[in-house]
Length: 448
Ligand code: AMP
Image 1 (cartoon, helix red, strand yellow):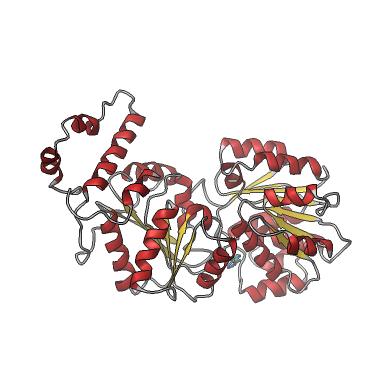
Image 2 (image 1 turned 180 degrees about the horizontal axis):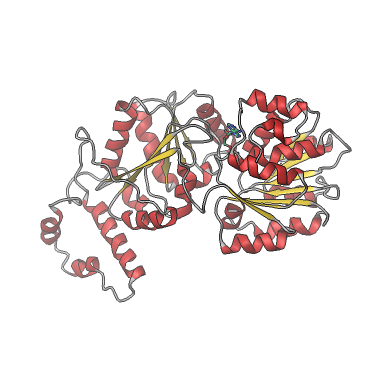
């Protein structure tokens, strides 16, 4: 297996760009995939972001297309989100620095004018999200007849987001004779099916077993009774842990992200922290990512959809403020840290209702996440009545889901829901009935 970039028969332009990027050794996915792609084979790549998969397919594409030619796109890369598309575009431009290849990106959420102008000038490689690609194809701006290479990146996410109809349409409009690559973070039956339809005699390249977090990430779990205690522990890490140099805080809903962001803003200011979620305008999102990437701020608060695929190197810590309910997102989230050859820490905050998801995640990753004690300096708050009710209701629902005969302790209790009963029951241990409601937690919790 090749263990240096020089072994790939790349030309000088590409080797110089790889050198400028600071890469000394190819990563495992690059070692395996590059020779196959150079050889013209179809590839099914099972690799998470953070493994170097983008370079694994872009570098051989640059080598194959070599120099600018004609007006029409020859290499098409489809990605599920704008953020990932932008990311791939940035990488591709960096790797193509010493070539004259014209590389553009198109995505929705902003006007198409600039994108159309760029395409009209002539392009070699196009990176696109499915919706915008179809729009500009139907309007006649994207001409597909010269496409020789097609990449579907994060195909699993593409399916989750309901893009399959668009992808199938794309497959109908591009030449049959082409090289295909399909990348997915996880292997599943539906990916296998897609691979069957889309790839011709593919070679499977798998760099880590299904949904396994990278070895370079150390994981920890904190069991916390409520939202406010989560905030206190977050504050502990942000203020007292000198190792937390660059941090992404993941929340499962926009409103939770907004609440956590507001809390951090009160303690610091927007020189230290930015937020990234789907409610923000596209430019705000790009500005937030760039500010974080360029080390202008050290904390980024994000939701899963907004953060998917973002490549920010040297994130020292990922904090899962909420446990993700889509289990695979756990792997994606913690893949933000420990990228390529760096190491990182992934810390998960878990309330009693979220424990259910932790068990599922542990099953998926085939690892137990070590539980750590709450640091002594972190104040453990009492759980407000409403939050306690919400947590209990969720636990009941989980039990019912697993066992349809389960009657639901919570609802039985609710029948005798005199205030005095509830208070008596609330006093002890993890759930505690008193204390102020934090923000609009109840409202947020409903969205779980
Ligand atoms: P990706 O999996 O494509 O999102 O890449 C993750 C990160 O690894 C990016 O920051 C790349 O710049 C970086 N990277 C890619 N290939 C290498 C390599 N051979 N050596 C070091 N870093 C790399």
